[in-house]
Amino acid sequence: MGYMAHGFTYPDENPDHDFIVRFWHPIMRNGVIEFERPDSDKLDCRTIREQQSVKSFVIGENMSLAEDER
Image 1 (spheres, rainbow, N blue to C red):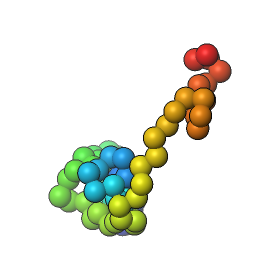
Image 2 (cartoon, rainbow, N blue to C red; image 1 turned 30 degrees about the horizontal axis):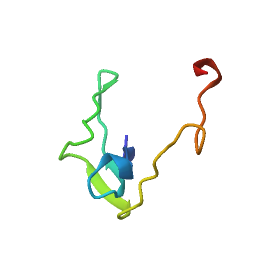
Image 3 (cartoon, rainbow, N blue to C red; image 1 turned 180 degrees about the horizontal axis):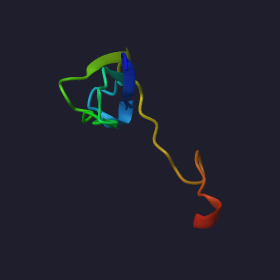
Image 4 (tube, rainbow, N blue to C red; image 1 turned 90 degrees about the horizontal axis):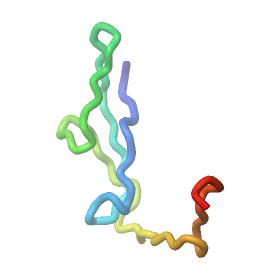
């Protein structure tokens, strides 16, 4: 299936506040792909941006509730 993106690790999800993309070589067996866990050593992790600022969200200031949550 080739070399594919597995997912992202966002700055608020790691202590260094880096933006990281994970790649892997998925294998399909009998029509099933078993995904590696995001912390697996089998993934190729590459830092896109280092030490990003983590934005805090404040309801009513920089985010709003969905219509059904009001």
